[in-house]
Image (cartoon, rainbow, N blue to C red):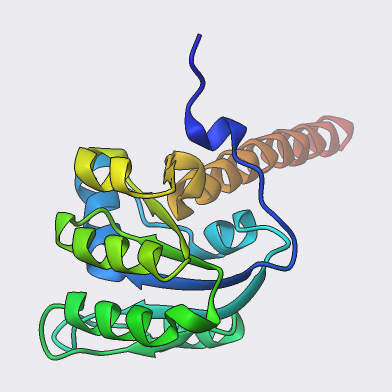
Length: 190
């Protein structure tokens, strides 16, 4: 049985990694295909012990970014870039500019427009990894990358918050039952 590349991938320590996030692609894909929000903290943690030199989040100016997200993002050590329209050209310019300083480029997004960027980065000696929702990632991108990591619902905010809600609902119900039984005991003893 052939295993998916993500199951056999081994990271090397001391790799300098740049993470370039096409926020609109990743977030819209998560919402469209799974009705979830992407958990960026979980993704950054999954990158592992490699040295992350830059984390760049690209989202067009006309799309809203909450102050809470901005604070959260800066807490991760990330930068936010706000192009006037599509983020692709910003991502390409930044990745090309930084290529000589990075061992690994991680692109979060499965847009086929990034094929020439992948070819260029590989020609400069960078390992290129694509991390994206499989449903919105072109097969050509998956094939061109050195490594493809498919995002799953494990990397979503709602998966965690749903688990927390379920646990708190269970706790709440059991606390309500115990307080109701205490009330009944108090009433019957009076």
